[in-house]
Length: 291
Image 1 (spheres, rainbow, N blue to C red):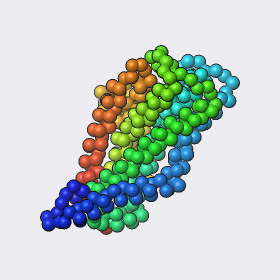
Image 2: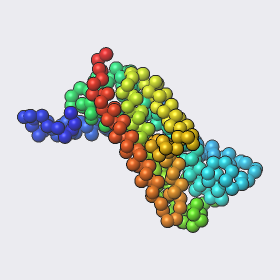
Image 3: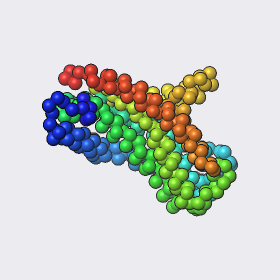
Image 4: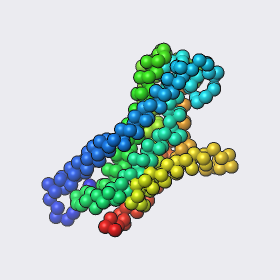
């Protein structure tokens, strides 16, 4: 039963209490998620990616040729703001999906494994509301993880390298303030990119009571999707893969600003939200939580 449903003869005060419990459940979920040492350990690991990258470039005695190494790496020594962009390219294929797989895979399976799922489903929580709350927590972690990487990259880049107007991929130059705004836009793009994988992880989490298995399966799905995306014979499939547009944020570093890939990415992720959200709902509403 959703929060908008009203039972026959139910008083408005009871309805308000049920709706309020939804926000309380969301607050509790977020609180539990960010009180875990595992969550903070993953965020620290994400923050270390740009730091290690910047320190390695700073200590290197050899200048990189244009195009050598990950995208934007050759520009880091010229402008520290490129540390965040380079770190994002490095983190997207493995590190960010790894953290998302851990969080999303633990959503339902973790509660089932601990034996607390049956207590969470006591009225007025409800299964649909619990699914929405669990997914909201995973989606929030996506945002926090990408922002952590972006902020860490900006700070270490400014500390170790010169910072000034940024020359975009199109050859145009923008101010530092505008480049920081572009960085936040890139973080938003990457956050949207991870929403489909989060929903897949939530669905897998409803299939098992073993959280480690759900985490591993979610990460494997991410790796398989990226492998399929580089096989030329499967080019017809590529636009339908949730990972296909993950690196499309390069279009946000051009002038004029091109939001085409952002829109395509959002549409693909919404498709995965709809399909795997429906599958998660179908599985969870019939799940035997007493077994």
